[in-house]
Length: 206
Image (cartoon, rainbow, N blue to C red):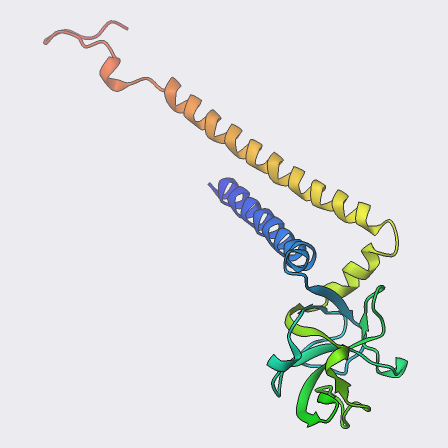
């Protein structure tokens, strides 16, 4: 009984790990492509504790006219020192919070600031420099994603997922074999109703 319980728990844990891995891969790789969003890796702590270093930020396009104070946006910034997101195609990018919106003769400009910073970004962000508004983020997964884009780590990750999946299949197969063995043992037990009955007053033959 203990062995069966441990086997069930093991299969549940492996199944949950597989589901979690598939959910993260879908959230980081597939969903952004379907929604024309960007997956960015946060490299600095300017947005901590809201967005920790190493997080993957999913930022999708937005009409600058829809932005409001407190929105967290991703934008192009001219100062490399302000860069805190890595995107090979569009760096340098910054992901900070809108703290003030100002209307100027040239259009709307957005005053931004990192949650962990004491001062606002300088200069303000123009509407043309806004890339998108942060939709969601996955803490610390950026380290894994960056490693996968810089070497053969992708093969190791896929091999690891296949290994875990193989262990799960093996545990399922072994669990099924145990159930079949128990069913066979039960079927071989004699049924008391099938035993020969002696007539009244006589003993059953031995």
